[in-house]
Image (cartoon, rainbow, N blue to C red; front, side, top):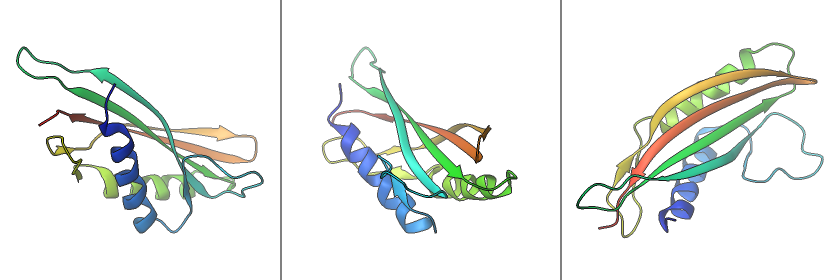
Length: 126
């Protein structure tokens, strides 16, 4: 739907990789030991107006830890939030847009915890 999708993911990866002390992936290598962050599922929805075409991007960032408590996963999620919320992403050929934090959830896993942070942004061709 949008040529901006890959550029948006690349910008998010670059920002998270620079800010976090744990590895960032979009596909986790086999036998990877937690803690790590995964740029997860993404959805693109039409966000057209009467005069312009646009796309709403919904992006999931997953955090995995092998710790028994939630502190570690919440600390990493806090850094993800600080790094991405209201961050302007420049995508060639598209109006500059800003990521907005949408929600955060933590889940117990058999060997630790998983955290999910969801962000939204809009792109519009120039």
